[in-house]
Image (tube, rainbow, N blue to C red):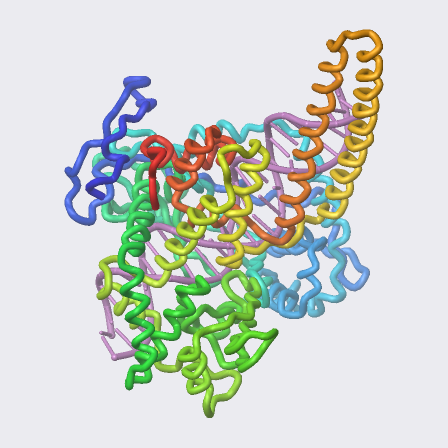
Length: 573
DNA sequence: ATTACCACTTAGCATCTAGACC
DNA sequence: GGTCTAGATGCTAAGTGGTAAT
C-alpha cells in the first residue's frame, strides 16, 4: 500500500507507557506480505460458564418432572430461549436439535426422552424471559470487559479489536432453508483456541486450569485469535476493528482497484461483447456471465457443497430454473426474468431487457437442459477471475460491484442535488442516490415491525403541523389587515416568520416521510459501508456545504477517517 | 487440474441506547 | 423523570478469492 494516505497520517495515540503522543506509522519498512512487526493482546473474552437452573424451575417430559443432567439441561435451555421464534416449529430445526440434544444426554435420559413433542420447556422459557427483563435494568460492567479485551497493541499503536468475544454456545440458526439449522453449536474452550501474536510480546494468559491449543507468531495474517467452529468446520477469527490502520488500508486499496477499473471498463466491455460471438462455448458463457455481473451487479457465485448450506446461487452458479426468457415482455424485446435466492437467501427478482446477442446465447445455453442443470455449465469463478486479472491486475468479479456501486452514487449525486437545495432536500437526494445503489446491489431488509405504526405517527404529526400552518396563515392575514389600518408592519413581519418556520418544518417532515416510505424494504447500510467510496460522499458534503456527520455517524466517521482527512472538494471517483 | 483450506469482506437481523417526547 | 423508538452497535452467518496440497 505504497501511496496509501494512512502512511502519511500522524495519529494521536494512547501509548500504554508513554501516555498520549503523536506517532507516525512508519513507511515502507514492511517486507512483502508482512502485515505487522509487533502485535500484543490479551487473548479472547470467554462467555460465562453455564449456571444450572434454580430449584423452582423444571423440565417436564410427557407431563412428568424430569431432572436433567447438566449437559442436557444446558442444551434444553438453548432451545427454550428460542421458543418465541417461528423456526423452533420447523421440522428440520427440530430434528437437528433433537438429534444433537440426545447426544448430550445420559443413557437414562436418552432412553426416556424419545419425542420432542412431549417435552415441556415452559418453565425454562419463562425463567429465561424474566432474566432478559432483569438484565435490562442492570448496570454495565461491559466497559471493563472492553478495556481489558477490546484493544491490542499493533506496531506501537493501540488499536480497537472488532470482535474480541468468543461466540457463546447455542443452537445454530442459518439463514433461509439451512439444512443444519437447529444443530448444537458447541462451547469453545481455550484448548480450541489458536493465539497469534509477536514472539517478543507477552503471551495472553489462558483461563485458570486451561491451556491454548497453539500459540503462533504469523505476521503475514491480521487475526489475533482463531478457532474451528463445529457446524461447518470453518475457521472463525478475532480481528481488528474497521477503524484500524490494517482495515483502513485494505479499504483504500479496494476502492483504488475499482477506480482503476473505471479507466479500462470500456475496453473490457467491448471485449466481452465481442466474446459473445466466440466459437468457444466456454468463452461465450464467460462473456454472458460478465455481462450480468457488470450490468446487474450480480455476485460471482462460487460452487458450494450440496447439503451443507442453504440452496443459494450467484452468477456462475445460476441454474436453468432461475431464468425465463421472453422475446417480448411489457413492450420490450429480449427480456430475461431472474428469480433466485442469493446470499443470505435474499430473493433476487428482476426483469431485464438485454442485447440480442446475449439473449440468443442464453437460448443456446438452455437447450437440452433440465431445470436443475447449471446455466453456465462450462464456467467456473476461478476461470472468470483468472481471465479478469489478465485484463487488469487485481480485477476480480466483485470489483464490478464496487465499481458500479460507486460510479452510480457519483452520477446520481450529480444528477439529483443542487447547491441551492435546503439541507433536508440535499439529504433526501443523498439517500435517494444511496438507495439507487442499494437497489442495484439488491440490499433488502424485512420491513421494520413497527413500520406502519411509525408512518402513521409521522403522518398525524404532519397533519397537526398543517393545521398549525393554516392557523399561522390566517393570523398573518389578520395582521396584514390590522397593519393597513394602523400602519405598523412589525407584527406582520413576525407573523410572516412564523408562517415560514411552519412551512419549513412541514416540508422537512414530508421529506422524512417520503424518505422512510421509499426505504421500507431497502437497506442502505451495507452499500454505504462496503461499496461506496467514502471520498465521493466526503467531496459531495464539501461541495454542498454540509458537515460529514449529516451522512456518517460516529463509527462510520471512524472507519472512513482516511477519506475524511484527505479528500478534496474536486475528488472524482 | 482439482480440491481443500484459509483469510478476509460482506450481510441482515437482534439487541442496545441515546435522545425525542411526554 | 419516565417511556418510546429510531438509529447505532453487536453478532455471526455467508459470501469471495487466493494459495497450498493432492
